[in-house]
Image (spheres, rainbow, N blue to C red):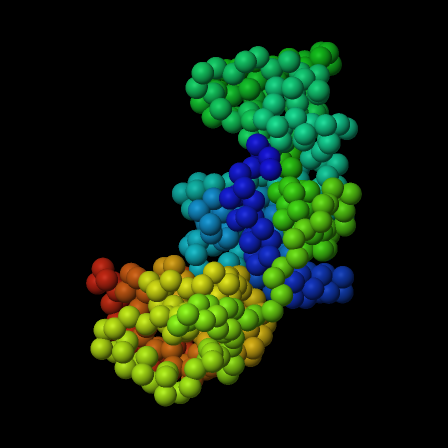
Amino acid sequence: MSALIPRAALGAWARVRRYAVPRAMIEEATAARLAGDWRAACAAAGVLIGADAAALEPYADDLRHLAPDLLRWHLPRYPASGETTLEPRALVVLARRAGSLLAVATPRVALSTQRVTLVVAGSVDEDRYHRTFDWTAARHLWDAREADRLLTRTLGPDAAATLALQDAGRPREAWALAGVDVPEPPARAWGLGTLDADPAVLVAAARALGTPSALIPLSFSDLRLHVHNGGPARAEWVNAQSQGLYALPLPPFLRPVDLHLVRLGLLSPADLHPLIGPLLEPYATPAKAPRAGAAVRVRCGGEWHELGWEHGRMRMPHTDAERRREEALRALGGEVHGCFAAEQGWTVRSVRLPRHLDEQRRDLLLRMLHGDLAGVTARLDAGLHPGVRDPHGRSLLHLLPCVDWRPGWPELLRRLLDAGLPIDDRDHTGRTPLHAAVRDDGSAELIRALLAAGADPAAEDNHGDGFDLPATLPA
């Protein structure tokens, strides 16, 4: 694979790209943007407008060309733990005008609604946001006019040879190819081999700063690039976070993870955002085709049985009498096997689920988490049982704040309740769907709908915490 990015991280990023920005969202947002309606584009991409018209006026040109779906595509995520969600409580600064800044604030909570908020502020509120990203020099990450600059901003003239050296774990040779002799790193220094950037690009960016030197922040020790007088660049190792040195902001110059996904065959360019996929065609290798069909085979009673879905029930080659016998056995504390264990594992995470069924369950949950209401509905229409839980014990009812901004969510709520999902179901922390709606930025309409459906307003979680509904619900 590549020394730049671990195989597990690539797999996690492939899931991010499949689910985090649904295709329907991209199509709706693009249609609105091309029609000249940036507000409708933001609404389609789950971007709330958190500033009034007067504050937004200096940014009129920026907003006309804002591609909110492309912005969402590039927003910071760290899927090392397997999660696909946005980094919470981050502020991404897009532009500065007239003493203010236009920025996007990510959600307060990582594993719930993935809506973001477009804000205008005088400065960064360090108490409110735990991390700030400056994209004012990286318009290719959000401005449709500059999207095609993604590779020219991140790849140097010897991109293929540089990548080959870095893939092979020879970063100092990659820097030498860019004309920079990097000394042997100090004993405690690390990060040069996993710095996913083209050295030629970083040298050019350091020169563009107009300062005698620039700092490339790594771990324990940083790399200082001397670029004064227009002569050859020179590198030296210095103590981490050295005072008085200008640190080069790395994110705008890092290679897009999409490049690795297509060149290593995990995704095809067609799987990517349409403003990005065509740019990567020259680097693509054939991607493994997704597994076709929904049928799953399991070992049952010495035979292989094929399972599928029909009308919210698992289809299997067993009679109703056999089903009743297994259900009675399970009710008496007995252990079920084969087809019936697979059926139980769909709704009970402590019971092992066959791999392909587990993939179907994860697919359904990830679509719900990322606001793909059409995808969720299509899978329920295809027969999947809605009684799934994520690794935190949350049901689809708990995840309703993730889709309550999409048209049609009340029909999904009714469908889940009609399928028998309990309105006061509990996750691993004892939170009910009403807890999730109140604490995870669910809409007032969702909270009211849950209350109207019989949710207990006095419920408490495992820590004894309840609600403050009068403060939550506007009049």
